[in-house]
Length: 468
Figure 1 (cartoon, helix red, strand yellow):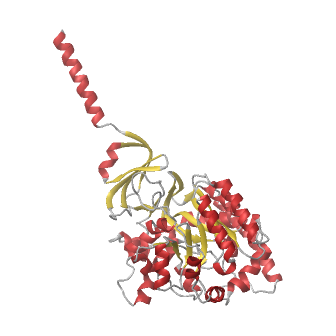
Figure 2 (spheres, rainbow, N blue to C red):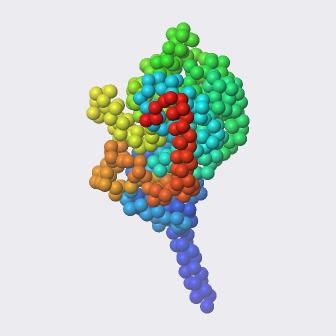
Figure 3 (cartoon, rainbow, N blue to C red):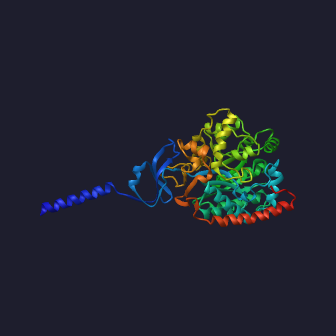
């Protein structure tokens, strides 16, 4: 009897040990049968790969054997599609979607067309409607995080919160009267109130956004720098973008470049993200690297405005923090980072007269980890690694333009469309499935934008401008 009991106990213990050895962990989401581009330091790629998500974090990335270790509430079997980090748009003005395609090809458009148009039409309602449309466009194109500069950024924040995306939102500060501030000082106060309201939000990072060095005084730029360090928030600015900027800053500073000037006044810090950075030389680049400044490379907008091609490849290769941006939808016209891929790769080959320059893997890095580094968020997003936030997209590899796929990086850069993005996940939440956005009513967003466009059209015609 004793022997039998001992045998039963031994069998029970062995069974328990066996079960423990093969314990299945319960998680929220499992993505399997994927071509996983991790974008980690080793650029690991997993065929038949798996990504496991619990809550808002990635808990495992690896090969198909991982599937046996997890039981998920939701399973996405993606049948070989590309699974990669969500794209990060390092610079835009999302609310300007309602002005898209106005004044294209007008010389000195910012001062002759955009500023006057904004003075008549920018309002809380306009900002909300435009941001909603921009959010939908970006999410459907695989952008899960974006950096924005505009007015009434608290309205943009509400739209970001609703759709579920991640964003760094900068309240614009500029020296002349605008819709939400009579002067730069009022703009700073607006930004401080916004920062106080959203400082602890899990997906929204509030920021200062002085428009540019030449549209703000030295004193204002220094004050913003000091406040950004005190509050530990980013500063986003247009930097080294135009000839007008060069001329104004040279006159103000005794011949210095915009980057030299910003360094001299103490405004180059790791909190700063400079958009465009076209007109820079070796000395400027060294200063940007020394001060650990982030850079947003906006190829489409730069070449459309004929401002030149930023030495982005050199900055990337020199180890600067640089990522891709679209600029606003009145500049590059789309908010699609995917559409930037092709142009970034090809134009840098052209200007360098080198077919091997800017290979696809560098372009994809600039859209993911490079962009995360530019925003100083590389510890949280930009790659698919254990412990990072679960911001993930799935790209359809069965679409005609993606068949056949021999090299996933080449396919993304030279073949993909924004419409190839099938699923989008932010903070562990499925926001888009099979191209249907699950958190907002896309049709309603579009209708509101179309109604506002009638108001824009009436305003433009009344001012004597041609609607093209």
